[in-house]
Amino acid sequence: MEIYLDNCATTKVCEEAIRASVYAMSEQYANPSSLHKKGFEAEKLITDAKRVFANALSCDEREIYFTSCATESNNMSIIGTAFAKKRVGNKIITTQIEHPSVLQAVKYLETQGFEVVTIKPGKDGSFNAEDFYDATDDKTILVSTMLVNNEVGLILPVDEIGKAVKRKTPDVIYHVDAVQAFGKLPIKLKNSPIDLLSASGHKTYAPKGIGLIYIKKGVRLTPLLYGGGQQKGIRPGTESVPLICAFAAAVESIDIKENLEHYNMLKNYLISRLSEIEEVSVNSNENCVPYIVNISVKGVRSEVNLHFLEQYGIFVSSGSACAKGEKSYVLKALGCNDKQIDTALRISFSKDTQKSDIDELVDRLKLGIKTLIKLK
Ligand code: PLP
Image (cartoon, rainbow, N blue to C red; front, side, top):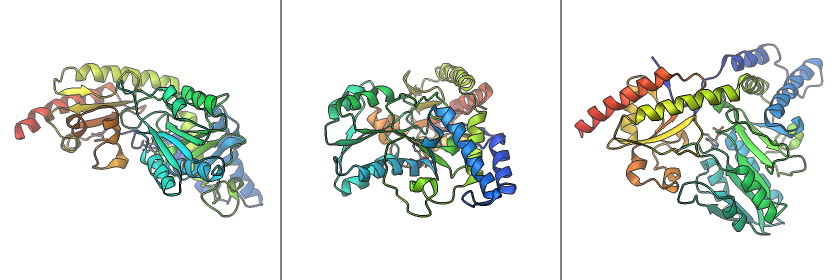
């Protein structure tokens, strides 16, 4: 038996994605830049895929570019904007709870003379667009925030943030890391203040190794790579047709509305069952998505609990997969104390998660508390 509740770290690849990639690898294997018919056919698969993403995001297909992962999309957005706009200003605004692929990119930019301001959440653990307005000035070139946080599932008010910063400085570029939202929440880029958006295939039932970046028409980035001129030279390198097709097939097969109903049902059920356990407190509040539930289990350290559950084929996370072993700066910023942080577990659902998986998890958590607390 395997109960996989670590879908924020990565998802199992769906059948549609597998089929699409196998077709591209076995039949449409030509280089999409080749001038012959087979090259043209491979290129057409990329164009068709772009249409799927443009449809999913309500943008123009010419605004979609492919990358190797969202880490690359985030780096491209942040470093590419900073270098493209360095004559205009040097200030960048982000938040304390971003993914390391944003925080490390801005840290690098600090070594290059850029000034970085990180916005803290308020006491209630939410972000206020007016704080971004106040921090923005005429030297501000870029604001980068996530849409959904990967550890607790907090939703940031990106439309309000984007509108607020542009009200202050109209030319500021607004980048959104939508990795934990894309394919799960509806995202409409038409008439939105978002200029750049990152997403990743392996969080939405496609394989690892494929990401995308939406670049609003007219927004200029300095490329991080130089090469053969593919993707208008903004991101050169031969496109991975199989991974692009897999990503598009996976996204096309997702029914966001139906999945959200399912996630809401699962979250409500999980929360009600967890209320049976005195030692459990829930760190994800009502501003969080229904597919990520972060909890703390009094008296049982995260890693110990994770490995206890693993013996029963239940897989959860002790935080984000990218922050192995380190104390969560996200939970700290959101007001959790050290004990809550040391005992935190992240449970994240997929479209295939069942109520019976939650029953099994809750039963094993209860058993774990009995066994492990006694052992101490
Ligand atoms: N941004 C967020 C919010 C994430 O959760 C992740 C991955 O966990 C990333 C960016 C990086 O994505 P990738 O693994 O595609 O580089």
